[in-house]
Length: 465
Length: 62
Image: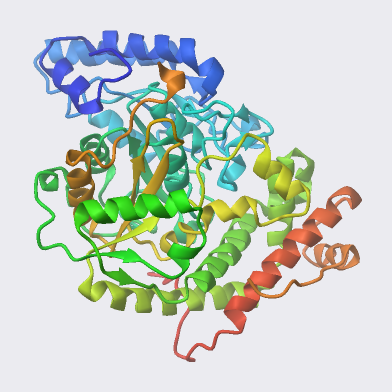
């Protein structure tokens, strides 16, 4: 129960059943990180002795008769834009490295710790979450555990690679335009972008606040649900967090998909990907018996509006640093943040007005639909350096093309699970399961059904074996 | 996406000055390219007619 293959829930059951101590589990995880992360480079900070001490404290609480929580002893790690008490929150930057350590844990980190999980470290990302590759000029390149010559996706690339590499069974990331779903797909793991407002972002360095989301990564649907259930719910510390009670998804995993109205996304979502990415959707559709196709209205305009809002909000957030320390930005984010600061306000407001219109039209589509299937990315993982070179050679939007299928969905806060398909000898691909707001339970029912049917799974990457 | 928009380095320099940014000569070409890209995709929004009663999405709750 201390091996890389162990699921989070199996670890928690073993710790709670006293078959293994939390300290033994965490020590094994730290040993794996020390042995394998040199090649993957998912971690920018390893919690080390602090994690061992927290695990020992959990063992002591159990010995004293206290309930250690549903995720007792489960090692987890977080994208380095989450505050962790006592650790400097880098947000992938050089600039934030000069700030003092965080005083408190981010809300989602604190929630996982309350559930008994043990933080083992912080994970690499694109600077300030503005990227899809996790090739970071300051903190290094994270490599895909399924093929170390390829990127893991981004911006939560370290979060996906740590799970695919067997370094931690649970991680947290954030998703603004695809930053959970893209790396989940390219690394062959499960990733959930919950409904906007479902999970608190308190203590997280934001990017584009209008559609920043916090969510988990895992190698099984049940682990993903357990992590989501631990972190979801209202929080007055996040202005965007909804005042609605948590709706746990774990109880829905054993329900069948009977009665759910399913469809494949057509149009835009059937055009802009390689054949293999589109075939992955068809494989999932066949397994579910889905023949219906629906089109979302104006997804290209939605993507355009998402780009404008992202550029403006991200640039506004970092405007002071752009004025005084522009040279300290990663070269591939600096030009984009500077450009975003020059976009006229009328375009930003018009993009936000379009967002209202689009939200209404998509809501109409979901009146007779529960779950929509769409590809997560247009291609499998690109080679390290390929997209960075494209952006520097004048092809500014090739780099963002990885988000062609994810941006039109997070733009209006829809919940999405990216489920992994990993064929033997092939690179992983992902399929998005998309629902109406607050309908995560429908997504989990479909994901669990596909997992039971053997259609989706998250085997460890070769670098983990 | 819509037809390409052209932004010159001189325009970048002038716009940057208006918002209090100083963009180095070495960065201006890349920033011009990025800004042109953003203004290009923005046409997809501005050319799309919206009813007057469609408000911007964010809602402030006092």
